[in-house]
Image (tube, rainbow over all chains, first blue to last red; front, side):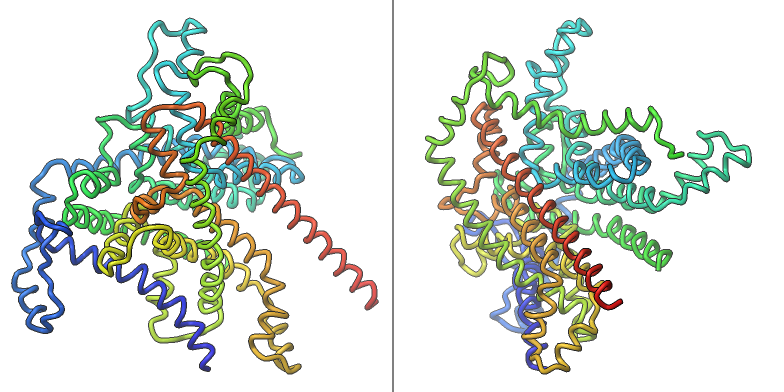
Length: 297
Length: 273
């Protein structure tokens, strides 16, 4: 019994100390006021004063920093633009990933483990390097422009790097395995005699695809979309390396508030609101997973 | 007849070209003699030499390796414990909170994890350096380990463990002699995952590293910001090669052990009959 308690207590204590408590600190600083000091905030919660401290904290609770987020255009525009960039990239990843997953599921069974491995392998290689690879391709003297000019398709180099287009390409490229794998998992399990039945009943191949294959892979599509959409919203590396001055993403804003402006309360408030926004897709994703498990089990 | 058409062949070819071409270009141009990354000027291994003489990069590589080995090892122990708790411990006080804390770091934006850990370290007055990066990496990678290991534990036949207990094993012996060998492939892949996650992490390390400890991704990031450089191409090629060799070896080893296990089972069935 004691052993069981110790087994539970060790990872539990670790996660409490290094996951939950840090969040409470973020929340506390988000509710504090900015100050020109070290550290750069004036706490409004003083636990050493006991109940008295807690009472003054609640009495003085003014959500000043959160109100500030609504008054400055920058923040809500950054949230909206993050969600928009993530949504467009997710749609593009679906358009690129679905045919790949479909081709894999229809390949000869002895080929499938190799193809699966080829999809997973990039996931193991450094994220930073995969983003970096696109800088050389997309820059104005980069390989893509060299090829296009060499072919005589364009006269002047296209400006792709440091635009939102480059950010979309970067997100699609780095998160593509997350889109392919769940779709492949549902397509591989599909009973192909259903397609034959549809064709016997007079469906064309194309309409059999839209009316049988796509609905049957719906849970994989939903899972893949969330797996791309959720991490893309808070992305920092891709917008800061491939994006330009027009690229507004909340992960970058948080980073700059903290490291460049040293405004800890605002950075903490930005983090808190980002988390609240993410709760919606995460809950929807969990529900989809649960539904799938119930359908299978 | 399988429905494998020209359409499927084309989409697979284009898809894998999209996934692999950028890395192939990166590797090819790491052997470029020119200082301009995008202009080919003949084959050379010059940049690999420069890289090996660059003290700052070597220091960063050493820090990264220390952090990755330490954090992935601690994370594997903690993550395996956590998986055991999730699958086996039954009901206990605060179970929902526990499983929430296991899954939340998987979907948490890195900027938030980094920020919150940094604020914690400042609050408790812990100097930032290698130790704080190890603590941070352990925390998020133990969650990945526990997901990988608990998937294996769920499909594990508990009767084997109970048989060992009936035959006089202590619970720890039963774990060491029966459970661990069976879940070992999952534990190893959990460790590998934790190791590569740590090797790869830029954002959380940037928040939790002090001026005394710079990891390789932090160094790479700051030099990429100044522009593309052939040295980074060389470094990327080395990292890609290490990962590719590691992953392919791991998958061949696990495939061989699966074949051996299948053969043993078949032999056992024959012996019984």
